[in-house]
Image (cartoon, rainbow, N blue to C red; front, side, top):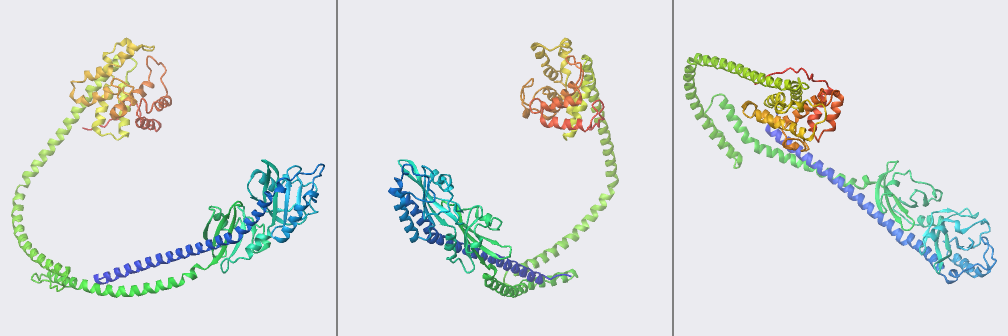
Length: 612
């Protein structure tokens, strides 16, 4: 089923507006949701922050003020046990009773405080108000955490984590304490105990959102304050939001509870204690932005309807001239060449119609020219047919000449190779230990070159170089070549001349021009410590690097005057690997090692494919 251009335009416009409206709607919805969540989080955090500043912070600072006041009270600073005074826990000495009375009255006026006391450094006594007869007689204030923390932080007021009172009251308390210092010596520690329930009373009296609540928790997740007192000292570490509030000291977050409800959590860290004041409030995000979503849907539907109508009208305006052109094309296809398109619009479609009419006139002229050319081509074709036999004979003659030339080139290369092999045999004959060495090196070199995808010209040059690489040893005395012991420095210097001797010997042989360069450099090292020119790896040709590895491997695995027992294949591979990157090219050694390990080469026999 074919779809008209008009329908295509209408469909494309409809798809475009659907895509645009949907995309904008989704983006607006998500943006509104993000803004709403951010606003809820910001408001929740501000509430938590204000609650802390105006209630919890003031309460804690007032408790610290009490402790600081008594820690700097002159009679407390100057306190000393009387001579022969026993350790006291459930009573206070006569000379301290005035202070005890003041404490008792102070506590009566400040019901937030459970006890005020002085832990004495001299003997560990606890001078407590009001007195608690249930305190254990072996109680030593110096061993308590509140005492130790205060002594370890002189000049600072410290807060303890909640703990069970040492007496029989069963109360869980938090201690605010500060060391009493006289002449840089610890006199004792002033402590004020606050029942943990007091924090819950503060929390319970405050409002956090319509369905929210506050709690005070430790870093370990223990609840220190909660509207429900039964939850005190319970642990919330397993809650979804707990791990998130430990990442930063202050902030907000949104999470979905296990019941599927959206919950905003706002939190801040209480200084000195590292407790977290946390506010949790359930919210209905989807309900809040429902009106925004509904308005977006209505606007989208209206936009789609309007755009569809505009698209339909536009498609008629655009397609009417095109339909006129299609009618003309249909008539021309039936042979009615004199018809022209009549486009009455004042836009680019009018220009299109005029250009279309001009094109029709040019086509008619081209058809006339084509007929003339057809007549001329027919005449020329007849002439070419007469020359066909002559061209065919010439083609056959050229093919025969090409075959003869290829045969001649193969024969020339064969003769070159025979000449080189003869020279190689002469080299081997000069050294009883290296007989067959050149042929084996040639086989190894060709195998490596093929694995490294060298072109045939480079392989041919490498083959000649491999066969003739030791031709320079013709100029080396046999006494040095066949010496069984270690060469002297002078003898080794003579041996090092054989690449240059080979280069000079082959200097007048044109077809070995590239091969003699390979021979000249096959004793160079990639680290620049070779000879005769001390070339580094980047200045050595790849064929020279290949020949260096092939020559070294065959020398390792053959009998030599200086080594009667040849290396095994595995020993030679290990030796090559040790010298990678210094003497030999790493890639060449890796390729050759892989060939040996895969047993892809018979070093003594390699079938050659001679290619010109």
